[in-house]
Image (tube, rainbow, N blue to C red):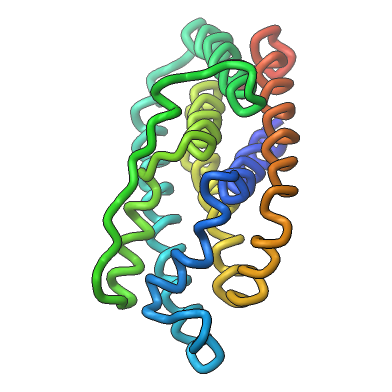
Length: 221
C-alpha cells in the first residue's frame, strides 16, 4: 500500500509539471533564470543546467522540509482519529479529482499566486526561486499538491517521504528540460495541448484513490 501511495505522489508531481497552466512557461522560465536566450543557448548549456539544478534543489529541499514539518504535526493522529482522517481525506481527494477532471470549481484553487523573478541570473537566485516555487499557486498544480497532503493525512508517518516523492516527480522533468532546453521547448510547443491528457488520467486516478480511501479499500498504514 505504501508503494501505491509513493507512486501516486510521484505521478502527481509529474502531472503538476505537465499541467496546462505550468508546462508552456517552463522553457522561458529556465532561460530567464539562467540569463540565456534560445538564440545563444548553444554555448550556455552548462549554465542552463547548473541553474536548473540549483532551482530543482531549492524546490526539493523546500517541499521536503514541509513534509517533515507536516509529519511532525500529524504524528499525534492515532487510532480512531486516523480512521476518521482516512475517511475525510477520501472526501478531499475525491473533490480534488473532480476538480482536476473539470467537473467542479473550487474558488481557492482558481486563484493564482505567482512570484517575482530576480533581475539578475545566478545560481543562488535560482536556488531561492526554486524554494519559492514550492508555494507558487496555480490551479491544477495546487490540486495535485493538496492531493499529496491529503494522502499524508492517512499516513502521518509517511508524510516526509510522500512530499519528497512529489518533489522528485515535479523536479525531474525540470532537469530533463534544462538538459535539453531547445528540444524541450520545441516539443512543448508542438505537443503541449496534447499533454493535457495527463491531467485527465491523473484526475481519474486521484478520484479512484479517493473513493477507495472513503470506503476503506485503502486502509491507512
